[in-house]
Length: 102
Image 1 (cartoon, rainbow, N blue to C red):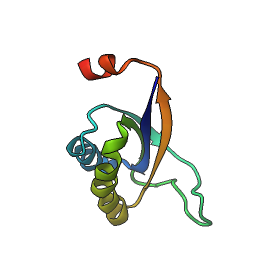
Image 2: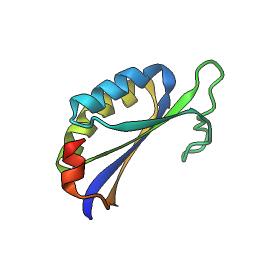
Image 3: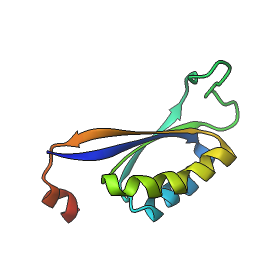
Image 4: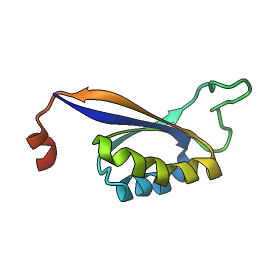
């Protein structure tokens, strides 16, 4: 087991390509995308329900040393187009050799 960072992003699907490009540029090459996400935000009045465009939930994992670069690349997109990003510590149970060989 080893410590990795989990990146969770909820954003408008229209910006999906830009967000995935920024993750890739940050050294995060694997991800999962869940489409048609709806919900209510943490702040009053913040609503993820869109009428014209669907929201997406992006989940990705990276080594701790990539987190600063991820934040620097993703933050401007979220500030400009909306959305939110959470980064947390998690444990991966695969060996590091398996991760590196993918």
